[in-house]
Length: 357
Image 1: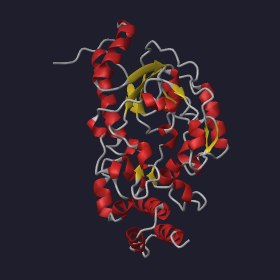
Image 2 (image 1 turned 120 degrees about the vertical axis):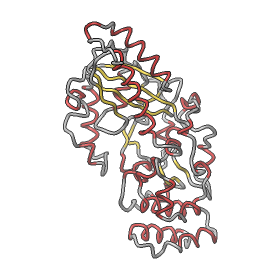
Image 3 (image 1 turned 90 degrees about the vertical axis):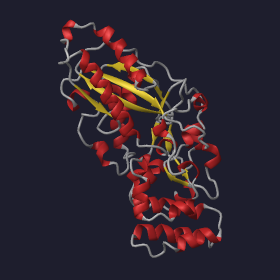
Image 4 (image 1 turned 180 degrees about the horizontal axis):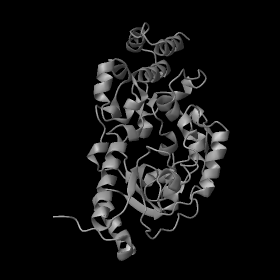
């Protein structure tokens, strides 16, 4: 039996919009909003940020011309963007307890479970299928995977406001949620943009940042950010920043953990976001002992795979250098002194020298 598609000019788009909201809830999305494609002020902010080289070695941020700020140039025919959010905070997340723990690793809460790109992309594709059963349309889905200003889009769609920590915030959910988008040629009614900013005079995120990566409110210098250094950056981490990284081996949640709005964050019931391989309670020495084969096996389908094995060891070596000196830690570092990678050897030697002082 063939599906009967309705032409766009013969369907009640307001009714369809309400149906899309219901379908999104059924698929597990927390919030949804619809916006137009005008992102002018955010384009200006992006250009200023790039001009200051705050993107570090993330060269892709400069690519694609205006496609990032002009959605119709990325996907021809785009008229509206459907923005969705999905909570991800793992049940029992021990944020403050793990920061600078003398033996255990800190892995960002978003990375402890299955790769969110895969989870959200699959759900968004299901949502597109539901829409296409009702109306003939052209759509494309994105989950942090293309030149898309997802936070700007979400703010315009009414999901929240961009906070001083540069993350999207929501009064009822804090900042522990993922974002995804559907670019569509449907002329759907749009939602009101989120108005106002509820950070007020609070500067908790700026004050708590271990490496002082914020040049000011809403202005993050990625080159000092631990998330950038442990995930995106592939070189030798500046020596002056290493002691400040503590035990953070993949990402950093400090500017979220200490944000007052995150007391309203909801724990996720999504099985895919539950921690794997004891990532929420792992000892540094144990993770440092992984072979490349173990790393590849245990990070399959995980955001952690993005760092790569060498940088994984690099990051843990720094954390071991910052940990309290024990025979177990010294033995672990010595076991990697002659590792084939010069990058790893450099950070191992630095860590050993930390324990000589």
